[in-house]
Amino acid sequence: MGLMDKVKAAAQDAQVQAKKATAQGQEKLEDLKERRKMDDLAKQLGYLIYRERSEGTPGGSDVDRLIGEMKELDAQISSRGPQSADVSSDAGPPAGSADSTGKQPTDEGSGTTASSDEGAGEKTGF
Image (cartoon, rainbow, N blue to C red; front, side, top):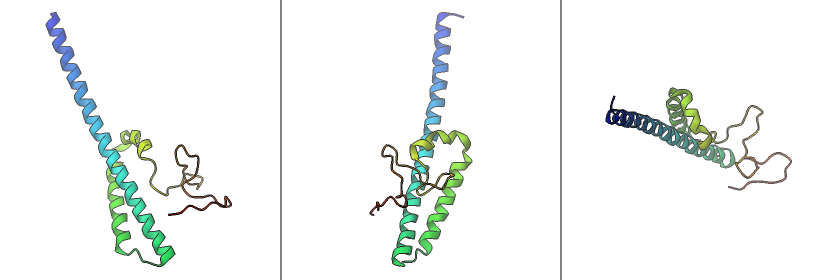
């Protein structure tokens, strides 16, 4: 095998690897977009429930629509399997989700929880 053949083979290998990396990057980007959309839907749902509980304004069909969209997104994210877990740390957990202890996750960098703890004496405003 001549030098030019080796160079050509190396270039083809590099091209294949670049195409794989591009495809993986596109998948991760799509996953990230879906997770951010899920977080946005969860936020909207939270505001609807807040208004329902605090003002008595029923969420009605908007709640059903948001939950339907969230189920669809969740199925899309789950169908890709574990490779999409790499992106989850960037998007964060769904809004309002609690860990196995029942506590709300902390905001990164601030050391505070997403909702005020009982007895802390601090209230968060909207």
